Image (cartoon, rainbow, N blue to C red):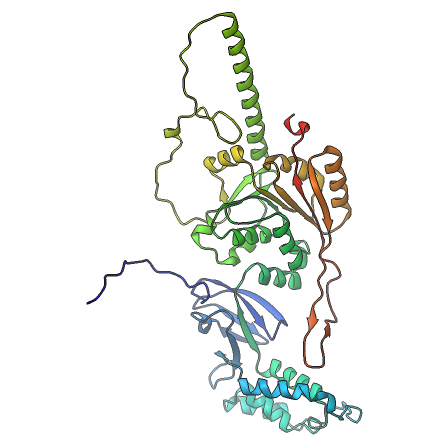
Length: 453
């Protein structure tokens, strides 16, 4: 007897690539990083050869591909490293201390290799794979057996990268995107390193169902990282100075679904501040009206019929609108895109409740001039975190916050990161590393009498 299962629409497995998704291609173990959008006609150029990316569609993220030289044209083929070879290498690495060979007698005069370029081209025309060419080069090398095991592995890896390049299919998310941009175009993200990005999210306490205010001048990397952590809950308000929004092209690489995209909204600082000033004026006008009515009631004893007025439960601001008129009718809308203009309902909610956290990543702007305008938009006891490439702008901002008594728990941090090479008998810090990952000023908005004025 068959059971009737509820019909469901097509779902996308986030662990497997699909046509139209963005991917990060890691070529030869980090030698080159490329962002690409998979389609039937998308291509990738490695060296002087162009390869189709269609074989990558439908493969799980983390898959490894290798260039194969076919008889007609080269192509990308799925590559699974043999486990037995890895075990042999690991066992050999444990015995490296007993090796007595060295490279003192080896002379680099370009005469050790007997295989010529014409021979390699002939092998390619015959359909030899990249691994077969590498093994032929090793067999025809007169000095390979005399080298240490370290040198042999370096030689093999060097020839493999040239004749059998490998492409790792990586999923673009906050860490991989930040690492790729920091390695290739660090100025586009304000030299924001991955450890500084993670510290920003932690210091700002970005959690589910949060309303986060973000001023992002690093290409949308911080906005995308916040939206990724929220996971389709809460909201992200990407604010900007003036009338032109800042570019946020990086957020398109996250492969966000519609639920997450519609949570990423845009609103200018002027509109948010205008709403905040309008709120304070409405509060003061409402208090004045109540005071005048109470004084008139003391002088003239009249029975006045009271009317119910809907008030906000959090800040006591009069909505002046019946509850039934606040509900919106359902409309057929197009697929949401990350970064659309914030609707009036969202701005009204931010005005009544305040934002739960604030993140500023604007290396080209003065930190204090931004904080003094954006901090009042937060609810009290809300955390904030500010990133800057240099220390002095944050130190000045920290001093001004202390003088104005606008925040407590102020902390100026410098994240520190050291990457290690972990190999048998060769574990040591990497030779080339970044000297600094920037600075972060964090704190909590405090209540004071000046904040009400």
